[in-house]
Image (cartoon, rainbow, N blue to C red; front, side, top):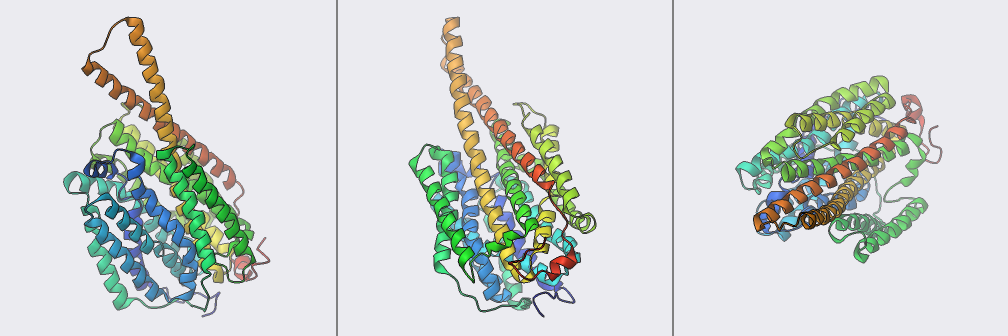
Length: 505
């Protein structure tokens, strides 16, 4: 099999094993979102930005390690690579499932992420190798079913378990599935991808770690320390400097850690840019919505998760359909339709009130997820179709890196905007309450003071959440404008394009 040939018969059995592994890995991206308030109480954590590290830290480690996945996928046989990755993931899951303190829980999440970081690039490369370009839309639609539905059902599953069991069950229930997937991999997994002798450039690994780690940590810490903290802007500055050096180094290397020259392919570059914006909006919504329904509406964890189930089901059901529609109509129609729907629904979430109806919340969230389901896989598949198949490991590594980094930055930014807006609004409302009390000449009782403070914080938090949704809506408008320039990649021209220095027009 040469670099531009695909297998005559796709290895469905092996793909199924990889799907199970990828499903439990993706599920962990959002499994803790609804459980964060419960974990805060259990470990006596006072700030949301600290416990949020269980979510953003997972994406941070993935964002650091995914760049190296192109090397791993190119250098090692897919059987050995999957077994190693699933073993690490299982160890991390056991650590988190029996964690006696927050430090051990966070460490377990980091180890989980280290194993999960290779799952998506490996599965995507096997899919790209196994199906011809003209059938990749439908195949990648099935992949999207795992990539989108697994993290989307996380809040619902998490809510049920947190309400009826200890939160540690979130990890303990995954252990059997991870072990079974690992055993099937040892027993049945074959090698279907070509490998070649490549060398890992350790300075590049170090630079990518400093770059993505610094940027992600700085943005995540901003929610707790504030943007004026030297630790925040210092780590972000160091991260961006390291990123610039990393990019320049990759462009000069014959065997780079990440082949950034594939950004010369216009549809890959445009798809990557849209993916960054959409990931920021999508992951931020998955954090802001549980914060609203639990902290403001006081809805129980299971009901909070159940409110997100229709959106999860819609995304899962739409993914294969979207893949087939992509094969027929191309990316532009789907992306523009999906982003228009997403933008309108996100603007709808800026109208949330203290007593917004259950139906309104579920409807807006579901419509938003429906729109998002029509965007991600078409633009990614279209971009990957334009690059030579030998560059697939680098293309998938770049896509996964930018998604993880954008998702973590988006979540951290939105939480930071929410916190800052909440503090500012609370100060204004407190000052207004003091003025009103002075003008009325009455002194409220301690019970009235406590009730007033609780009401002020509720209104301030609501203002912070709706403000963050407004920013997310503006981001989707930018993505919608970029989608106007999408063009369908012709299979013939893509297959013929083998020279990275002469990108397809």
